[in-house]
Image 1 (spheres, one colour):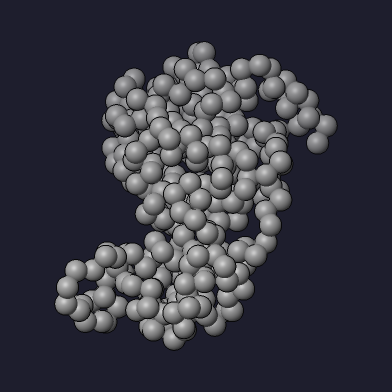
Image 2 (image 1 turned 90 degrees about the vertical axis):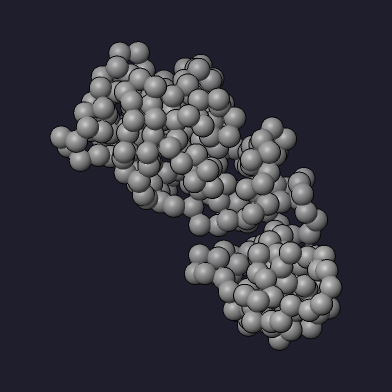
Length: 309
């Protein structure tokens, strides 16, 4: 079962079309709502097909996944009819390319190795908390504050430390994030976009399957199908050790690293939040190894790999 098929049949393209059709009301599309009850909260299939200038039979095949070769002109017409924004349009185009490809990622085990240079950058970013995660949000490396800012996650085995799993399932996460819902939305968007291009990847499938079973909030957000995770912004955090933080954050993809990215929090030097970062870094540095990758010594082999790379 792929992440998308946990709740819908057909292709990821069909799931996306249905989600956007459900969101758009007849009035928003410039139509007059007819008399009587509507079984769908948004546009009917025949209404969307008419707006896009395609046959209803063809549209039904697209949504059900039996039509697997939509042309660029059909994709553009549907994007206009559904009033997609630029991020949604780009995601829609990726789905159209992916729909007839067989995903070969199911049995691939992405490397957890983090390059030596990246680990040095993590160290140099102190006291700013920073960490490296892979494409599904598994934590791979961090500096002392990078792990300590995610309060309570250090109690989990390293192989369980995943940003989405933490946000949805760890009891400390809800209290940590000032805007918990916004935090969750960004994480789900990232997984949704990944599911579009790697629908059969085993690690993604296992993570999404676990969250669908354990978190009603995840189920609701997964069904919403948002596709625009933020890469920068500001957050308010309520840390139990250093207090309330008003900070910025930046996500930076690491080129040539199998989908790894670095996230760092930052604050203006001399500000209260910067001083709290200094305190957090100092306290965490007493007992947190900035370069732990697992609880079983994997870091040693990773360091050796880095020395010879």
